[in-house]
Length: 172
Image (cartoon, rainbow, N blue to C red; front, side):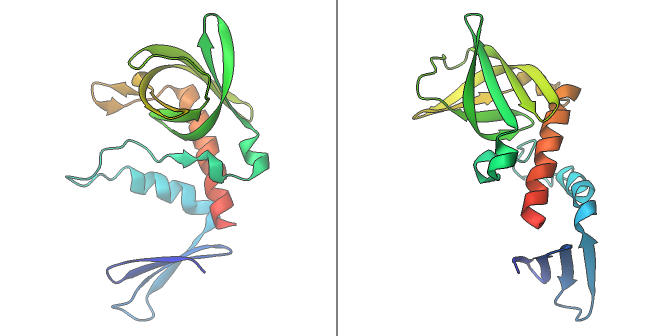
C-alpha cells in the first residue's frame, strides 16, 4: 500500500481509493472512494498558499500512462501549412513538453498546435520556451487572461479527460 505523511496526517492508497488518518488522534480516519477523487483534486488544486509555486496546473506525465491510454493522445504542430505529429512527454493546462529530434522551431516564436484525446480536440497558439536536447517546451499564452487562468473550453476538455484517465490508472 502506497502512502505519504505530512506532519501527523497519513494518506494511504488502496484498491478502492484513499484513506486519510491523523496519527495524533488514533482511530480518526476517512475513506475516500476513487470515484470522488477528481472533484477533491480540483478543489485542492484551487488552493495556492502565499509563497507557493505558481504553476497553474498539474503536468500529466504521458510517459507513465499505459500504452492503450497513451495511444489515444495526439499532438501536432502546423509548420509551413503542414501538420507534423510529435511525441508528447507531459501536458498541463498551460503548456506541453514534446519530443521530436527533427522539428525545427524557434525559441520565442508562436505556432498553432493541436491536442487530441479520445473524441476531444483543441487547437491553440503555443510559444516555444525551452529546448532540452530533442525535447521542446511550449507555453499556451491563451490560457491566461490578465494573470488569471482562463483556458479555452476545448483545451479544458482535452486536459481534464487526460488527467482523469491518468488518475484512474494510479488508483486502480
